[in-house]
Structures are given as structure tokens and as C-alpha cells.
Amino acid sequence: MKRFFEEFVVKEDQERLAYSFEEVAMGPAEPLMLRDRLEKVVNLLYDTRCDVIHAGATWGRTFHDGVTSMISGDPPVEVKVTITDLQRIIVKGCIAAIIKKFP
Image 1: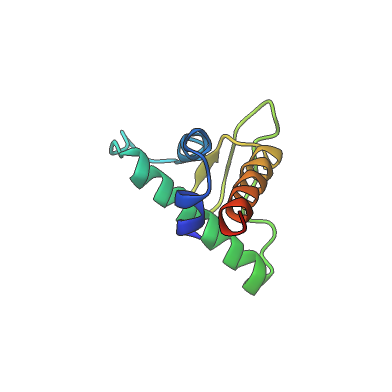
Image 2: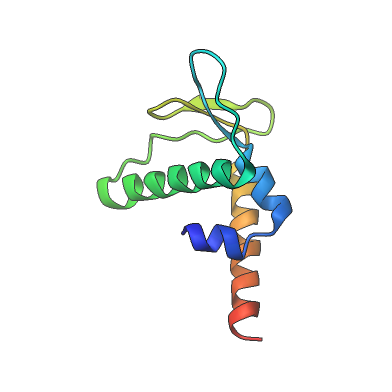
């Protein structure tokens, strides 16, 4: 999954994702480089995927509704991206992967 987001998702969408999921912390957060932020987001998405696929946990993550960001999950994460935007980023990455693998 990490390879997909690093290799096939365009830089603009990587940046969008990297800043769309923020851990809710007590106190100032440690500043991270884009690559590290993206890796944390990819790990979060992978963990969420595993919770849904293997445990049937469809209730653990709430996405931005287009008006207000949402805080959900454990640990709490502020989600600043809509499910539609996340789907768009993933579909664009899939198309890029297909084009790269089958020119």
C-alpha cells in the first residue's frame, strides 16, 4: 500500500492526504516531513482497511462531511478529507498504475 501511494499518487494528492489526517494530541505536535506524514496516513488507512476487512469494524472512522472536519478513531484523528476526495485520489492512482504497468 505504501508503494502505491508513493509511486502512483501524484505529488499534489500526496500532499493533500498528508495534511488531511491529523492526530489529536495534547500539546504541540512534532513537525514531520511530507514523506513521514504520508507514511503515517498510509499506515492509518491500512489499519482502517484491516479493521473493516478482518474485524468488520465499519464504525471506527468518520470522514469530513464537506463542511466540518471530523474527529474519530482510536487514537483520535481529525479527518479533513471527504470520502469522495479520498476515492478520487485512489482512483487517479489506480489509473496511473495501470498506465505505467501497461503503456
